[in-house]
Length: 454
Image (cartoon, rainbow, N blue to C red; front, top):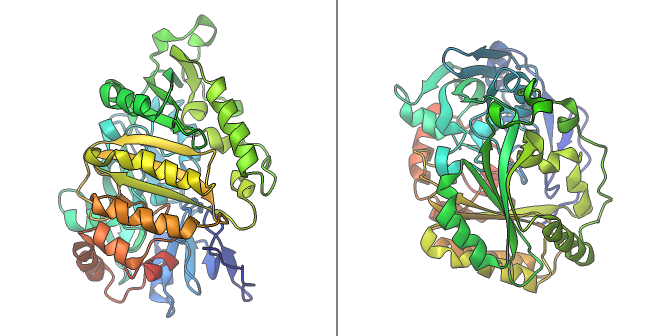
């Protein structure tokens, strides 16, 4: 599952996914205009072109060995439209930068994953989901319009009404239909920058899942941390919504939308290489469970604390050591909820325990052929790649996920087979037909696309 880094050729840069498992070298450029993107497409070599955001895909989705990789960090214009509660941004704008602009203006992004260190282009390409999927769907569902450079170099405007096939092939299309250069999407109006959070510690996995089934629909946001070490699968369930300004204590009521730099600050790497091991994970999971209140209502938390706790530690992925790590994330229907406990048990049996084990409920799927979420459960667990027996265990789990109609998340995947991909995404051929029309010469490709025969 790991690859030794190869020295890049002159002019190339070695690119990794967040898991640091399969690096490859490419020529990296920084276009600042649509014309420069079009020129890169027109001059594409035999290995093609790929857009890359901030590199938070865990595997090989945002890298392409021997290709030209476009970093759109210079395409970072932001135009806020308060009248329509929406924003138009360049695809290189990060959610981190965007939140610093829209929160003080009284808005929040429609969907955020567990990190704000991703670009808008990446959020659309991976069709990211968050703690509110059961209520508000994926990021792509909130996009009303996007501008894209296709495989012929043509600039195209896509929307859900006039170009639905191309639009939904791009949402979740992992950058393989073209280069997104601009997007317009709606925002959530807020009156404070704090989240009102209800927390419950649960005694076991059944207790946790039952509480989520019975109560999640009453909350905009819901997420559960699961103790991957303890055999019971005990956990901590946190749910909430944006706190109205009127709920705030007097000391902060005068500046309800203040979005403090302290809450968003990151610290230098604090995870020594190889920190994640069975002993430290037992200690960490026990401490994390114990520090959570048994039951607490209406606690006011910052956006960073509730949504992005890992962002405080810069390069926390270093903690998994030089061999790197992977995230195994699946979506399965409600009828297959038993796979959550079975997966945790199988991984625990081989010593593949984790500090980051997250369980969420998914709502309705959107029309995207490669969009990951479907109604039911999603479990995500980070594990070091060097665990003995991990490959065989995950291959076996793949078969179980497939048998119940589930699938794996492309933005987190680093080891799925082409056969699993084709069988678990039954609309793949439909997506490929639209992709072929948008990119007839297959200019856009990636290491992931080659691995999965997309």
